[in-house]
Image (tube, rainbow, N blue to C red; front, side, top):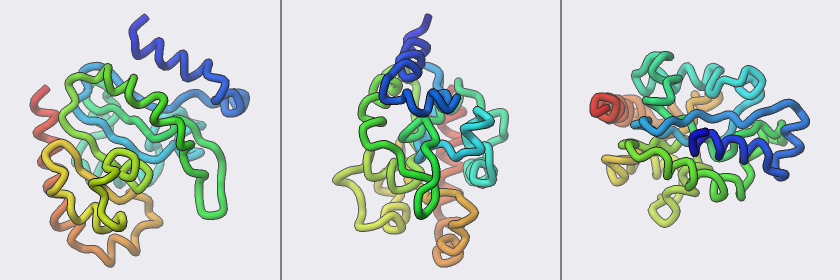
Length: 195
């Protein structure tokens, strides 16, 4: 059994995940030692969790178009690791899905990332991932953090969530499509091309 397989089983067996386990949910993420890109988002939505396929929704379609990758590339863990801040869907809250548990990423991410020695680019989607990974490098809000994307290059790119609900944000911030997306696609191709 590989180290990544052992980690996966430990996550399944962790008592902290017992409640979601009894709902029939398994940890939803992908990772392989050869991965060149790591995408860190919030947590699976209900549709993704139930289909056991990350980013299996309109947000995922939008994300793949932003990245400029095919479905085959996106779902190949030897190319792209999909590592949300929590690997389980926990239900709905007052304003969308419940947030990822704060203790989850610190417990599991370092161990998984240690098994991905070839990663060249980390894409941080949304405030939970950016708050955790950028910490003192954050700007006052998510928009300013994403707008300052050049400060985090060449190995990190912060993005807004690709949810269809964010269409107003995208309309108010046309620089995102004109400035950030071309650089994102260039960095993605470069990272995948170095495999």
